Amino acid sequence: MPDVKWTMKAREFINCNCAYGCPCQFNAMPTYGFCQAVAGMEIETGHHGDTKLDGLRFVGIFSWPGAIHQGRGEAAVVIDERASEAQRE
Picture: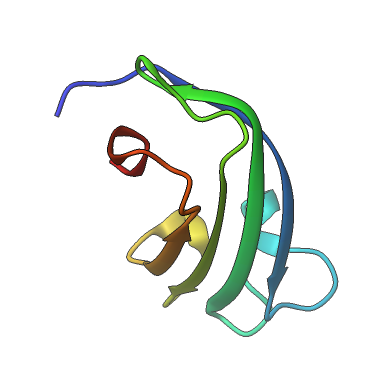
């Protein structure tokens, strides 16, 4: 898949299982060695390629066996019903 230019400015509410502050945001290990999080976002402005994402909302439940930056995570995401097929892609 070719690289696609994208940008997103959004308001977010995120909570994870770590102690105060999210160590993964600072490239550190999670408090308990793994990360579980829930997040909700409203995209103020954004695009993925030529597809505008302005005003869309989504929520997700996330789980990583280690730190976020180590990868191998899983996600379940619910996308705003107002999203077009192109926006869902």
